[in-house]
Image (cartoon, rainbow, N blue to C red; front, top):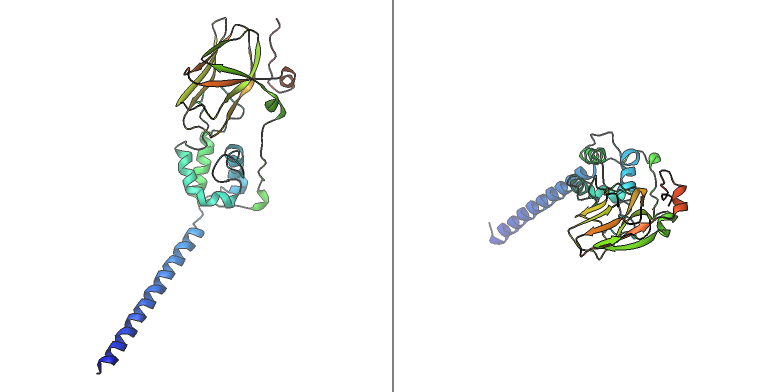
Length: 256
């Protein structure tokens, strides 16, 4: 057989093999993507009916368009690609980054997840993270604080500060410039009782942090406010007494 013919047959065989390998690779890639896109569903939990409300209450305040977090998490389409990463961050309690230690103060804007909420998100992701019926979907509405929060005054505290007159404390604000691994704020009343206002640890949310007390706290004159470490500073937020009086659980200043 002439050499040219032999070379032509060899080239055709190699081309056929390459085409076969390319087809096999494309088929494998297609099946892999199909498997990811149609992951087996093994849970009755859904985004629309069960999970979205947790995200809207705990996560979307930062994870929204224009928020402090790097990507929005307000819709199923935004959350689904990150589902497994979110599960890991939730189980390790790195997200959502609230910072305040449980049992050291109580806050009405607490964004930390409860154990049932952690279990809900984990089970939903493990079960394939289904979307569910869209008629049950609840749209996200941003909450930027009520009027009383926006109108709340500020009292700067660094180290120790003794009150010269009674106040009604609504919360504690920590500025983004405060870079310490931990921070504690306490109120020592003249009668010797101590109110634990805030104990902050890492990880913390970015930017200015507002920790609004579950109920406004009446502190009499002579109370010593202490912020530790001494290099840190916070703003104790001062409630408007009339606005607080109309809020459930509001507490008025004691009569002098």
